[in-house]
Image (cartoon, rainbow, N blue to C red; front, side, top):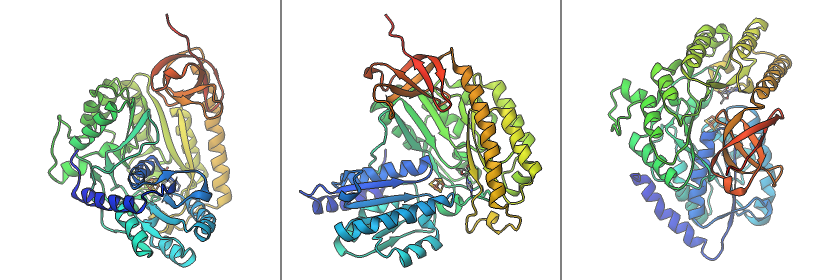
Length: 474
Ligand code: 5AD
Ligand code: SF4
């Protein structure tokens, strides 16, 4: 992978901070909110921080550097941030802890203003486009003992070669594109993550090969709109270097499918409007691509979908699902749904329930609509009262749980291929892993099975996990 000049420049600052930290082995803690993209950004932050000599800790009374990587998709993240900042005040007073906040929420002016006014003890604020400069910013804070705000409004470039400290040793995430051009009317992401930019095919392939070499078995390709990978470049004739025949999301899947060592490929999130036939064919054809596809619905009502600027109707979504089910054997689907978008009537909500019944999703991530400053949805007059939003949410949840129970029963008595991830958090004597359809399976077995794909007989279902049995062969 070619290291960006900007990243090389940061290596100097990494060295500088490391020198400041010599013989101290200071401690750091990171809190990550939001989606897998943010988690991947945090892995890069941890990579840089650990190279600077910090050691991770969960004990808040010994933290020298506290980092919060924020999300702003829904309001509850704001409450969480301000609560956490309140807790950190004591650490600042007693220990002089350096407090750094970054990520999506920091791209919102009203938030940074509030932090400056109400939480003046925060040392460093950085945004989504300046994450790679963390070593430089931190070194300035340490040396000059000053507060620093480093936010860029323009779209950041894609930076290659940042150190990375991955959370898992079985599954790795690889960001393939940044930003979003869709402007769904509820969503803040295009305002805080900027326009779509794809990473070069060569850099992605080299990263996946590296991951495979390190022994990872599963890779998740990340982006706000993965199936429009390289689309802007193609449409606007922006030159990019083709590599191993990759010029689209479908060709990227096919190329990654050929990489030895990788056994499973997942991706989040695609947009239904960009789900072209070549992508469907690639999923069907590539044996390593998991047959669980995340297909965000958001609403089942054509009226609401139009108000959301989603660019598909209820029927188009259902037709797409039918087409995918016909072409991809053993397909399962997961989705995101927002309840209580402005103007959503009882009839509109019934349409959402109808789609949920018809598609029979394996997993539904449900959200109550949250007004986001600066988005068109926030300016709409027909906002739904909180009480109605909550009632609808509960009804959707009840339907989904009823379907989950039925779906789970279908697993009992089958044999599933499970990628074993490690010891179960709730019971150290058990191992835990996931099926192709991303269901958690807990079972008893020897530790040597960790990081292997094994056949498990499913013996019972327990709503949010399945119980499996491992039979030693031979
Ligand atoms: N309110 C509620 N949910 C939202 N999402 C995005 N914006 C909002 C909002 N303003 C949900 C969408 C998206 C997921 C990541 O978060 O369902 O797919
Ligand atoms: Fe949160 Fe969206 Fe940013 Fe992810 S991209 S961290 S969900 S605001």
